[in-house]
Length: 196
View (cartoon, rainbow, N blue to C red):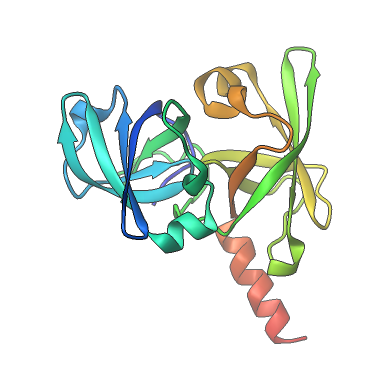
């Protein structure tokens, strides 16, 4: 379980295909603090550390993960948002994030507004996911508040700190992002559909 508060940005150092899976080498200032078998969120995707070596660590993304997230399009040199799993008893500064991406979306519009930014994302609403005004959403692992919620689009406001300390600064129009919709909202949506 995660909170969506990004701890660091990691750089993709290598990608090694193994059958239908990819082993990803990530260099980060968190590497020396990690342990093998530890869960780390990468752009909102929970992956297990399988090796640590010389300032880098390695995780494996299986075909299921590659098919449903933006990790399959990573290239050497790309930056990913990183968060270690939360400790029981810690403050929950973001919201409950599982690290299980529901679907990808794409960046439709970026607007600067007096030192902050508004990012608008579009997603396939036929998958049954939804947002609500002032509800929570996770974009590339970042816990954010929804503004301007529509049937298949939503916007988020990004403060300068978040812009500088996440990979939001590298997003462009048409960038593919990982979306994890609010956990409670997903359960309520499924329950309400069962009664309709």
